[in-house]
Length: 193
Image (cartoon, rainbow, N blue to C red; front, side, top):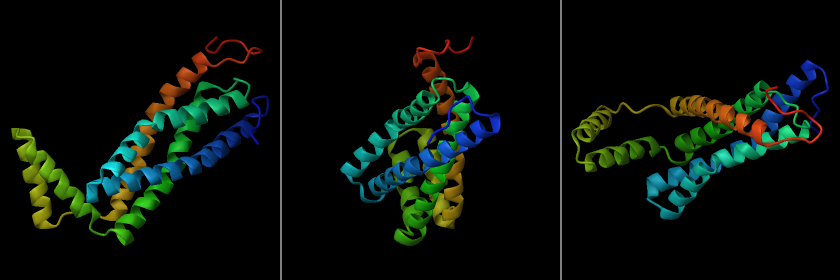
């Protein structure tokens, strides 16, 4: 059960982390399905998997908006901007841990050739661009293939976490501002006063 904003500061902070962990678990499952769809679209050239992956990626802001707005309303629209922003960062952090674990298991056990296949697809894509920059990038990727300089599955999983937390922090900042400006409880004063 969410605790209201009239509790002590330590209880509010604990509540923000708990909300982030709870919502992050659900979001992590969402991100894991998204990763599997995108991985299948790369390795099997599956159009349905590609469409699902793209749709799920595009819907991430909507999902986070839902989580943040629900928590804001549960707090009777009294949550501070920093608490909402932290909630969003926690959602992405805990969610990305689950997604990174899914990606690691997929790359190590389910499809160990995923990284080389992805590099090959990227090389072909850059080569097909027909530009000098695309050709240079294709040559670089070809050297990676030739010298077997692929990143380890663990390194890719860690990069997934860093990327998710960084982009999630920016997205949470924007959505927290939007929610505070557009969502009001009739009994509370407007935000930023």
